[in-house]
Length: 250
Image (cartoon, rainbow, N blue to C red; front, side, top):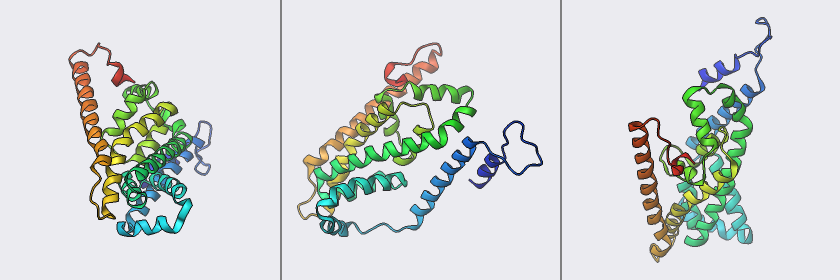
């Protein structure tokens, strides 16, 4: 991380004399700020202890009528700070119950996706657009024309955390509406499942399997999307001149 930041900060715009102090393009400064922000979140995540799940319902009781608003806003800020979505959804289920917890977790995911996308777009898009070439440029064009299904596919791939994917999408040419819609759709199945598990941790009634059922649908949807992606990639390798299907092209 440190060598990368040093290399970025030493870049000079054309026409700046070498004898001057280190000068940077605004895009480089913004991208360096994005990297520092993510690094700070990562260090904080490692150092701050997580709360006891059994004590979470007491938090909701103390907040009273403000608990739903605090749950959505607090969950969104935690997701932006790279806290895993699994933990946020489990906590929402423990505080609010299976169904309400899933709804509030989805609201937090939508808000966090919007914030992360906006931050990535403001701090990183110009830097990335100035430097991508070749295959990376083709990948950026793929993100630009991506549909909702394409976003769902990427969200379901186990490549990174929810927050990092949001920041990363902001640095591409992706459109905001398909990104937000796909983020919510991809988050919905596991939101119900994990919220049901979180509710069961603080309840003596056991797991609400009716509330957990959408998680099974999520796994099935993930398997179908991955299978379609794998078949499309295989066809592309066998016939490089073929056009990828709309579901994969977005």
